[in-house]
Amino acid sequence: MVEFTEEVRRKLKGSGASEGLCVLFVRHTTAGLTVNENADPDVASDMLHALRTLLPQHGMGFRHGEENSDAHIKTSLVGTSVTVPFRDGELLLGRWQGIFLCEFDGGREREVVLTIVSSGQ
Amino acid sequence: MVEFTEEVRRKLKGSGASEGLCVLFVRHTTAGLTVNENADPDVASDMLHALRTLLPQHGMGFRHGEENSDAHIKTSLVGTSVTVPFRDGELLLGRWQGIFLCEFDGGREREVVLTIVSSGQ
Amino acid sequence: MVEFTEEVRRKLKGSGASEGLCVLFVRHTTAGLTVNENADPDVASDMLHALRTLLPQHGMGFRHGEENSDAHIKTSLVGTSVTVPFRDGELLLGRWQGIFLCEFDGGREREVVLTIVSSGQ
Image (cartoon, rainbow over all chains, first blue to last red; front, side):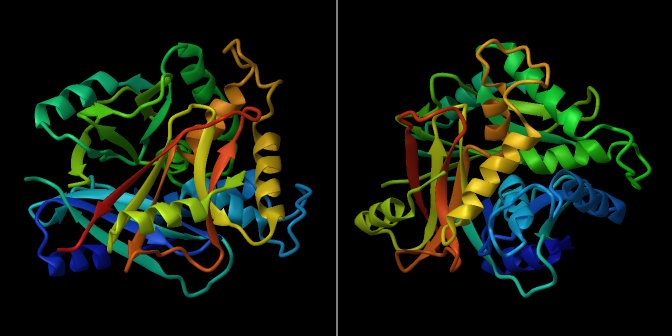
């Protein structure tokens, strides 16, 4: 679980947009995106632990030959995009919320697309 | 599970927007948002029951000290936002669909942000 | 799991939009939408298999009388919408990503709404 809230915040500021939606989309099938607590890192590790318990890499009779079916399934459960509103150029995240990449298939370089859509008027 | 579809509908009408997307975002890390059946309340209670079965509050070896890791994980699985299209000022929900707040950590006051984005001309 | 990426691509082209977001929304409570691997069909069948293992149709003590509580819950876990960015009229999907309808309650006709929102200028 890799938090990247600050990077989103910086790019939002750089865009000059005032009000609307920030949408992050991960271009992979074994890594997801989520919004969750960024204060205590135990929350992120508990999440990975629970998902591993529910969906172990082996032992569920998966047929896909790359031994990463668990990672694909976790990705669909967590989701490949997150949407966060902003106002006055600031993300409207709650006090404990951060934006995370969830890496479910080993350390790799991952690509996330940011789209900013203005609302209002 | 607290349905608040009517409130969204009212605010959409009040905005005067004709066509686009309603995005709801919950500013918390132990409560999610979902779209599901609003006719039989057993569906909502079956959902909470199943999630409690898969992710019990205790017994999974969680390390986060607040005894609510299960609530954080459920939140990431269900998600912190829902997106619903509208046309002619009406939400394009299916016949059985309603918008729900999923409270995973005890009765609390929760804040949900509504963003309306226009599409089309 | 029914892939319909090409249909979305065609409608996006037909719209003439250049840059923004494609949002798909399913108007049902026992079918979801997801983005996942479209190369090896075993990924999709492993996903359905794992969800059936975690959430069997019977045996979890569901109260909803239609014997499809499992399908409702899977729908909320996978989600009822997906959001995919596009640029120069092309979906910014990763190499292995496709857009899928996840049918959790028997073969039926299902309705998905496509909304295209422009970003940028």
